[in-house]
Image (tube, rainbow, N blue to C red; front, side):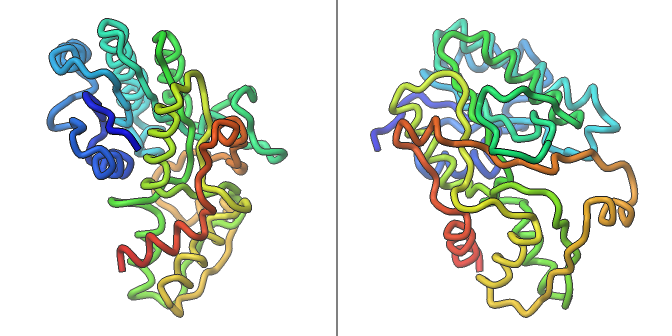
Length: 283
C-alpha cells in the first residue's frame, strides 16, 4: 500500500479515524477539540491552511436516538459541517471522501441495496447524513462510502456486549434487524484501496459473509470470547418498549450490495472472521 501524503481525517478519534491513523501514520487526525464542525468558517479556514490532497470526512453526529430530540444539532454537524468540509475541498481541489451510512435507506427487506437504490431515511440521523451526501456530491473529486454496523477501537456494540457479559448471564438483543457488521480496520483498508484506484462516486463497503441480526453478531462475539452468557432474542418493538427516552426508528434491513467495489478488487473479509480477530485483540 502506498502512503497517502497530506491526508486529513475528521472524526480522528472515532473508530474509523483511529484505524486510518494506524494505516497512514503521517495523516493529520482532527476531532472535535481541533475542529468544531458547527463552525463552518473555522472548518474552511483550518482545512485550507492544512492544504491536504485528500480529506476523509468521518466526523459526524452519531447519537442516533439523541438526534430525534436534537434535529438541529444533528443537522448542524452532519449537513452544515459537511458543507463546510466540501467547500474547503472544492477550494483546494482536494479529493473528498465522505463516510455515510445504511441509515439513508428505508430498511425494506429484499435484495441487498445497490448504490443507486432509492434512499428513504427513517430517522433524523439518516436524513442528515443523506444531506451530507448531497453536499459531498457537489465536489468534483468526491467519493461517498456507505457502510454499516462499524466496530473497532472505541465505543461499539460488540464491546458493549462483551462488557455486559462479564456481569450478566443473559443479554437481550434485537433479532429482527438484518445487516452485516464492518470492522473499522477493514473499512479503513478498503477506503484507501478505493483511493488508490482513483474511485469516484458512491460505493458500498460492508463486512462480507452472510447477513445476520444483531443477536447473531452478539452470539458470535460471545462465542469468540468463550463466554457462557446467553442471548435472549427479541423484536425491535419489544426492546424499545423497555427503554426510557425517545428511540429513533432503525432500518429492519441494512444489507448493502458491495459488488461495485468488488469489481475494482476491493472487498472486506467475512464479518465473522473480523469479529473473532477483534475479540482476540481486545481481550
